Image (cartoon, rainbow, N blue to C red; front, side, top):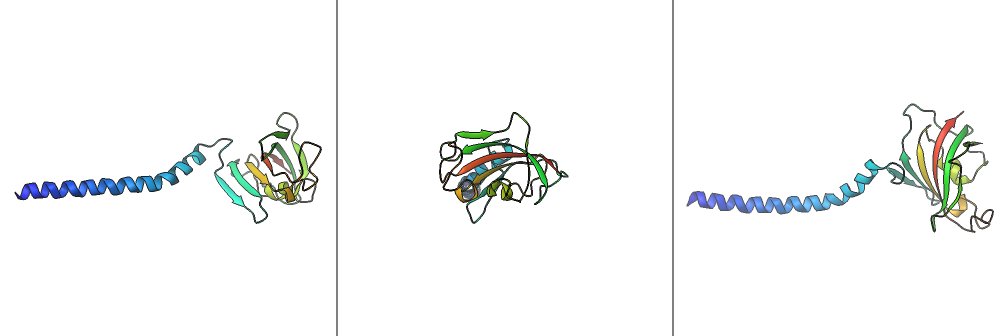
Length: 162
């Protein structure tokens, strides 16, 4: 009789344990699901994202050389990029095939979203910059390709820093 009671008690404990394990798995499963793509990511899945108060979102896509030179205010940087409209994903500019774009960082040679979003990158780093209109081309838009008040998404790779 005692053996049967022990067996029964053990079975109920095991079934309760299974239920609590399943709940734990499902509760943490959501976290794992969102973390897994970040580890597998190559180009499209961000691993870290920072959102600034003005709406600028900077997402780390790929890390370059750990000892690579960092882009800082006043330095001459070379970048490759693809620019898309956030609204419909339409590419409006790209320099993936050709020489990298060179400019001095932080002095207003490019849109404000780039001056802020590229700062701190290391050579080889890739970032996705989601730029609000105020840090992009604003109410005027640009060149017929970028409508007024457009949110822009740039995938940027830092090629060189001088």
